Length: 278
Ligand SMILES: [Zn+2]
Image (cartoon, rainbow, N blue to C red; front, side, top):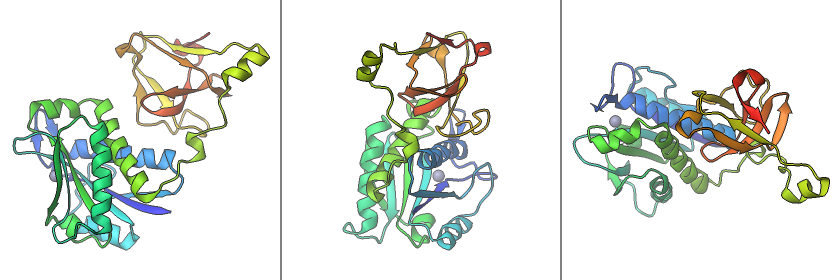
């Protein structure tokens, strides 16, 4: 297992930076929680621990002590920038060589995050921050946009952006540490069009009407689906309703669908929800 320690910056009595109605501590927790969930749901050889999972006050020393005691393989600290500017940058400890494994991981994660976050590139950097200095494993701190710049802050209010930033970090970690996708995320072959035509069966479609606000979605292979909801939901109202091909029905009224945003998920679509199966 690759042990990845995820550190949402600030928290509790320390809100971090603020601006445009946002506090850094909340944005970092949203991103970090999503990174954890994706790693746990979609990869089989990643073990994750977080420095905080709610709005708690945790000192910098407590954070690095936690990672060091656990014996993490990598320390990822998630922050939001401030001070007037725009874009994305990340940091490793200032005394670390460009030829180091840490610098290699930084370059990989940096490039993957920038593919998805829609922010300008402020570069790979080094600094003497506590968390990258006092952690005994390779460590990196990412600064995901400027909270006091309106255009960056607007992105932070969008759950799609949070998801993309988290996925960028995960894609980088997956590349840097050769993380393996779990079977959950590539379940048994969905019925192919060939199979459908030879059996004469029509593809079934799930329609989620626009008049419902949100649809809870669930990771694959959890039962019952009423618990274990992913933090995320589908929002049909934004799109005037959503159509998905049904890839499986593991329980009555529970459908496996492929979403752009969250990959393959389960969704509950009983008659009382307004979902329509065609
Ligand atoms: Zn910060």
